[in-house]
Length: 450
Ligand SMILES: Cc1ncc(COP(=O)(O)O)c(C=O)c1O
Image 1 (tube, rainbow, N blue to C red):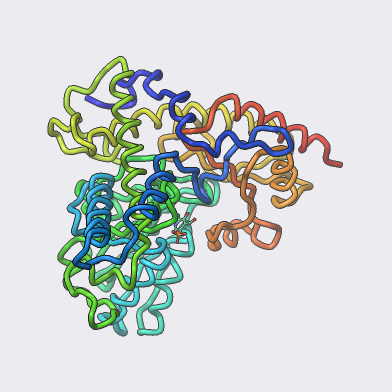
Image 2: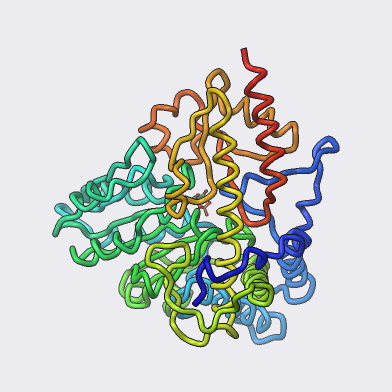
């Protein structure tokens, strides 16, 4: 069985991983650049860059034409759909591409709005990015009532009791994030999907922040929709929507008349970003190679990838001889990066908590780290987050400051008017050595305060 326990810590070949990402070699004033800005967007492996330029150099055309480059473009599109279907575990015609998650969510909300009226309710959460809030709140114009579940301020985890209370027989949709891009909390989305289904409501999962950290299995989750953005998991700047086929067929998109009315094309308007679609396939291939290497290197090679603990980082994989498939390799990749990210997170949080006047927002108890990603929100008394990010940036550490569009979170925690948080985001290409150097730099900056 493939779990974090049966995969050797050596299974992530970090030297190989880092060699794949040319941008990691950059420097800032002679100091190595440290990319802790992953929740805002990750770096890309060379193969993604190559795939994008190869498309533009050799296959560049519009789709649907009766000539070579156009047919090749159709193939590029089909391959990208197949790749994302493996990444999310669904069928290729349930994958919709768009410029980003926000645009895709507005597209679905507008379509759903056509069916809504007075008395219909939508349940959201105050822990979510505004891209999974504002598009639904806009449906108040259609007479829908918006309800928002709270989160616990002490550890920034979703108040599941409050969420359950908000869902009633009038609920038409429950929109919840898989993980918070602000504070890193992972929500029990399997339970949210169940609650929504029991009430006869649709579920819409924002997996943008979760995708680089944990395996997504839309079949096992049973969600109606799930959205993610490839630029958060080592691909190009694009968004991806999974929708159950029945919903993609039934809901009526706003579209131009000549474009196909078939699923999933009816949700993809205008000319797509073909070069980035080529990059998406290469990105998923990167995940696949990472997983195959992890299986080769791991002490315990999975005998068949079996269901993982519910709600854990690995979701649930189909119990089938998956090891030779791309999906199987993606499952293995997640197992390998999980252990590495966990090690980095433990060290980072332990070190952060030793810094005087620093406050960490979110889960800090290491026994509960399975409920968080390695995304940390902090403040240090006497310094605004922007000042901290600027001083860190001058030393080559790339972090974010502000609300990162998780506006309800910063408002609820009363930090919006004072600059939000400093966000430190770890992904699998980061190293323990980077964490140590970062902690030393942040300590120095904190100590230099009046
Ligand atoms: C959790 C979460 N949801 C949604 C978004 C919006 O994604 P996009 O930029 O693809 O619209 C982001 C972007 O940071 C995010 O972190």
